[in-house]
Image (cartoon, rainbow, N blue to C red; front, side, top):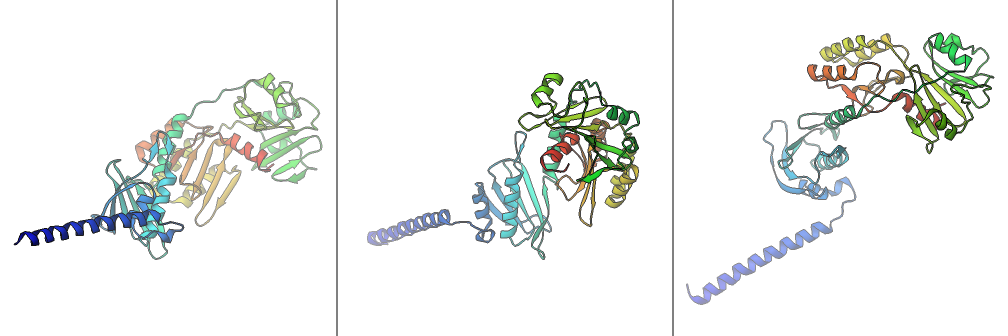
Length: 383
């Protein structure tokens, strides 16, 4: 080969390499310019990963049966940053990827963070059926539950001197609804309003909540009347256990009652004290048969004093605020029994049961459900 031909060949190779480089640069620039305004704008897994600010590595036919594709990537964030969940990031990525792959089953593998996301889809209905993160189809709910349980602490108990004759009578009669004569009451939003400045909400056979309004003539407890300012209440009872003056709602928990104040009324709930041993047995049966209908029916038979109950073909929402218990399916990612901070039983016993028997459907939430109920009543006009 002559020197001239060698020069021409080398020049051609260099030109070809330059063209390839320029082509890749232009393609990358076009990719960067591409706008994603809808789900259908994504056409490849690489686009999804890079849109979510991750590093795309490769994609291969899945090594697992029943999965279409394995996508290898280093994602922008881990599942949690400290105790803060990045669930929304992962939920968005999975939704985009499922649509891009026309709802074929896929896996996203992040070897750097040691995370495996396996997504099972329904191609016919174009929807995601289950998302398993590291083998758990309720990963974030499970992890959040552990974090919430670790935050739980016993609340301070306040000293109350109850001065209301009606409230003392109600307590002495074990909150039986017959302790308050509501014959001539006006009913509105769950409550029966009486002429003497009292309103009650009855649930099953007991008074769930009693309100003392600003036209109530006497002291309710500790020298406090319903229309006293929140600043005055704090001077008498000390720092609130619940709420704040800024929220226009403060509250305290005593041995027998919760007391909440708004500056225009005093709201009282009983501190519940039921046995929970039967609940443990029902949970064990539920673990064995997985029958939601039977489980919920047994709960309502045992405790007919729920304040909210919705049961449908796909949804269950059963709430016992005074007991610190919710039973919910398809309401939140926590499908099953949700335990609040005011749970009347032993939270550690339930945690042990969850761990030893592997009952996934037990979750913990660091909220006092009585306070949550009162906040909802005050701020969302439930009362």
